[in-house]
Image (cartoon, rainbow, N blue to C red; front, side, top):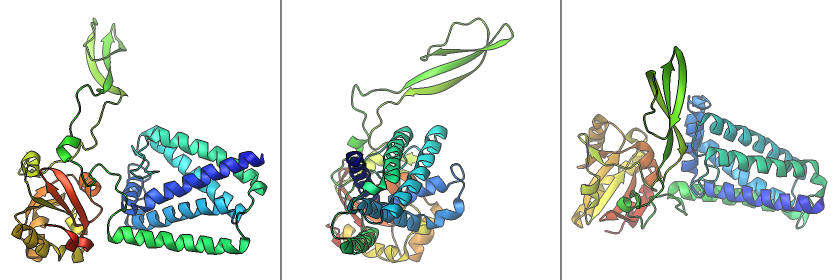
Length: 364
């Protein structure tokens, strides 16, 4: 039992530390995921949406520090109770998401290791079993290091976590696990390679035969049935290959200008997924950045999911001569965790991404 508890302790502790760290590296991304859970179609807790970022930071810091507390053996009763309550809640949440297909990626490991809803649920079930072992056999959780040092280790862990969270919020995630990281050629990342697996669907055809409704399933072909056709439903059996980037467009007046814009040798994209929520201090920096870029031969465009009227208002308010294009809000949030933010490209390849706080680091 001592060996089993030791194995469970290290597996759970390291997993909580890793899971907490990858989310702490990108707390804004995790807050977007929490907003999904808070939406009316999932948990219907919209009143929590404005506090999603604060909740995200507190949750991942607590998760990470809990892992450290378990490994050093600090307050085993409190630690195992906290671990048990957390895993019960997350197991329920992942099951709910998987069963009702509400959230397609739980965000358990951020963008580092994307998991399907059912994979997330099975992972939580395994963790629940390991934590139950720790909960009922906590007497085998012996402390490491001198007990007097435990409080200082936990205090230091909390402080370092909050310092790290502040840094990535004021700049950008230290580790970029997303499809739009520096060095990515956007159009290549949108291409489906030859021979890639295609999606497999079942077609459920409903007919009325001799006054009775019957369903005939095929892989696509219209069934030979003597009866009255009613309707057909499609069911995804096997997901096909999905390119890393599949939802990005640069639209204006109903046309997609993606290929034309990305062909530019020198391009700076100013991204503000929501101009209504853009930070004023960041917007004030745009004029200087635009002038610097254009003086070095760059084409500068703005990308936002906001309406045309708001784009014009922002141009007027901040004295900008900026051509705005429309792009999907989710895609823009994925590209850069800054509102506004800067992405410098050459012929479709991302060379540099910068938070508005680091606008002076842009290399033109």
